[in-house]
Image 1: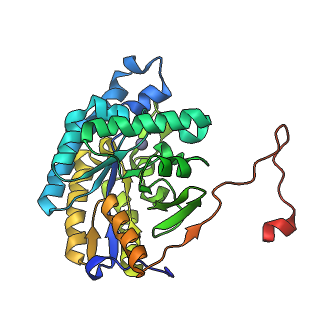
Image 2 (image 1 turned 120 degrees about the vertical axis):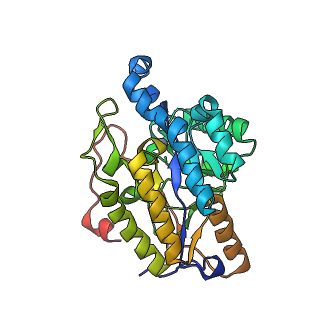
Length: 308
Ligand SMILES: [Zn+2]
C-alpha cells in the first residue's frame, strides 16, 4: 500500500517517534494577550505539562531505553529551562516550535523570518545546540516556511501531512526534508476541552484514543511507514493517559521490529539512504495554490484546468 517504503535500520518494519509539543501557557498568551495573567485555572492546566507531565514522560522513556523528540516554543524554553534541560540531559531531541506559538501563515514576510530566528535562538540558548528540526505552531506552515527553514539551517520539518513516509519539498534554495504526520495522530481531538482556548471536544478515554493510534501503528508497521504522534504533555501526560501509553510502548516493543528514534535521527537516516542510493523519496514541487488576483473573489478554475 506504500509504494516506496523506507529501508529502516536493522530491518525494522517501521519508524516511530512520539513528538511531544510542550506549549505550556504560550497558547494562552497568544489567544488572550490582555487577559492571560488572570486566567489562572487555564494556566494551571497548561503548566501541568512542564512541571508534572514532562518528568513522568522522561521516566517512561528511561524505563524502556528509548530517545524521542520534543518541540518547544522559544518562550517556553526560556520560562521552563529545567524541563528542557532534563530532556537534553536524557538524550532526547529538543527542536523549535515558534516563539509564542504564533502562526507563521498569518504573518508578514518580515515577521515570519523574525519570529523563526527568535524561536531558534531561544531554544538554542537553553539546549546549547541548534534545532535540527521544526514544527510550525498549529501546523500553520506558510508558503515561505520551507525556504526560511533552509536559510536558517534547519534540517527537517514536521508540520505537514502529505504522505505516510518522509518526502522532500522543493524550493529555489534546495530541498527540505518533511517528516509528516496528520490530525489523526494529534491528541487535541480526543483529549482537549477548554473554553478559554475555544477548543471543546467530547473527551475520550485513553483506551479509546489509543484504538485509533494503534490502528495507525499497525498499518505503518505492516507497510513500512513512519508513525509520529503529535502530542502535548499537558494532555497526554495526564495520569491515566500516560499510564496507558506506558503500557502501549511496552506492547509496541513486544511486537518487535520497530525503530524508536528521535526525528533528527530519522532525518539523518533518510539523508544517508539518499546519499548511498538505497532509497529515494518523492519530491513535492509547488506548495502554494495560485493566488487570487487582489480585489477579486477566488475563482474556481475551469474544468479543463482542474483535470490536469
Ligand atoms: Zn504547539
